Length: 565
Image (cartoon, rainbow, N blue to C red; front, side, top):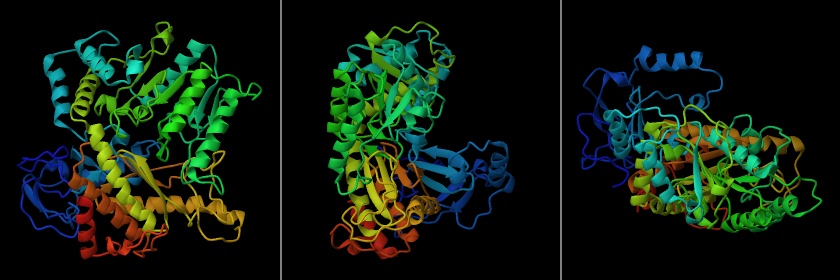
């Protein structure tokens, strides 16, 4: 089983969706979970060797945390850390141990982590091959910091990285190590194409997540910069009025091609076009034909195409690199997160004819992180040799199919989409009101109400005040679902322009049993927030109520059995 670490003993944390060690016999409840007795050490806020009985979610019921341990850490964190903290606001967790999909907090609660460091943990927490690689460097006496000097660790990393690249790029590629964050790699890529072309304008797409630094942020459409413009992204749920998704994609594509093709468009010829194969802010996969058209247009005008694979790379979408779905070969690839095997690392890979940078142009002291390179080499190799990209495609397809029952059953679920193990559930503030990422794009509908929208019945146009409140209601709903998931031992994050999208990024090593547990807890959370009232099938699919539509032990058991199968 790729997702589990069986054979643990002596209170060691075991990566199991049910919270029990592989092979252990125990009566399971309606969630397929079993109470487990584990030894909780002092680091978890309890007495050494103390046995604790866990509930169905793997949590410790009615346990008083050590105030200066768990609660004290949270209190000091809230006081000392700047207001810029993000995850900690919605996730009051003090993680002390983690393995695979499972995280244990200082209060003894156990969670299934579907944030995975924002996609950085493709093998989950503390995978054995990653730990072995890190220990190997530490025990060898090799320098931990080597600037950009050639080292055996660096050479092994680059060799494995080039082995995985799209052939059209790998044959004529150069690699540049950047600062530890992906946003620095985005900046390096923009700098690269500006120097190579002598031009300054950058065109990106609405809904991208290119980083938060001064140069990268405008490419995400979050700040004004005369040298960065945003084009409409392909949309699915938020289509233009009276058009289906494919028609909307075509309209958006033509609009995107216009400033590149039209000689009098008023837009200067750009230094590059920057895109994500799956828009990270809302998880909107770019159709393969759309990707090929963009590649054709940029190549025809000698405009470098920069593809940001920070979140989509290393098997996440069901291919080792997401561009491989469409067969597109970019001129520049931005890589980070998963390539460091859970440690900070970012690089750009680009065509060799762009290699005209002088030394010290976009340099930094932390380009030689040997531990991250070793962990990255182990991760890239493990994903490639075990075909985890194929595994992500298999589980992702099944998970999307099962999650679409939510959209059919609950009116508050506006859409379910994704690719591989990059999946989202979008919530809407009112039936048929689109609020997904890109909602303020050229052809998207932001909470708009038309006489007939998305196949729903006719209704009168509401007031602008009512329309504008839909995104806020959707965001509140998504936040409530996130907290309901947390209470059930499931960690998810929110994304989208209106923070109305629940995103799932489980590790690629997730087992079938764990995937069923994630689905079960998410479904239960949505059902609880929606009041447990099934709205019936809005898409004409019958029999939804027979597939765990109701609450209670019998419904959960039936649902989990079907999903696990």
